Length: 123
Ligand code: HEC
Image (cartoon, rainbow, N blue to C red; front, top):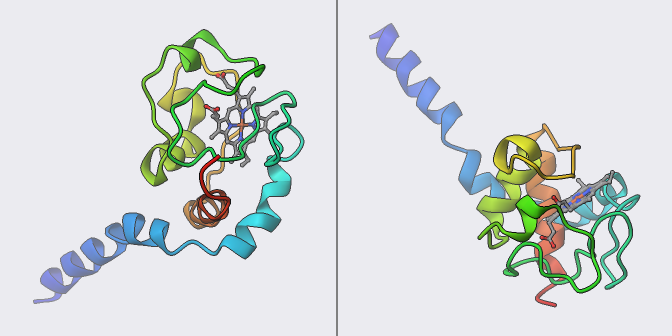
């Protein structure tokens, strides 16, 4: 009996990963974006990293004038909840050869940042 409820608890803990993504807090994500804004704008201007304006739903490596790694430029990634989450969770693990080295280890921070990026709408 005890073991069974432990198993249920484990499943309950393991599940929230994807529903949490859909429920990110965009306002909090905008604040967390200070972690990104050293290299990214959301206004179309490129810095060390490509502009993230309209990144949601866009194919990776496609911003004019941005400097991309060969890995990114030749990837077939399309940016959505799942791919951005995986990239931010471990950039070089998700895309070996990417020149973006920093990630966001905390899943709920990632969900909030993703909600913020989604709220910017398509480019
Ligand atoms: C130190 C600079 C730096 C920081 C900080 C940084 N990035 Fe990046 N980012 C880059 C670079 C450089 C690339 C291009 C990587 C490549 O081509 O491999 C990139 C690429 C990306 C892409 C793919 C864009 C595209 O056009 O395909 C996304 C999405 C992204 N970053 C999100 C973020 C988010 C969200 C944060 C904040 C949590 C962040 N980045 C923080 C430098 C940075």
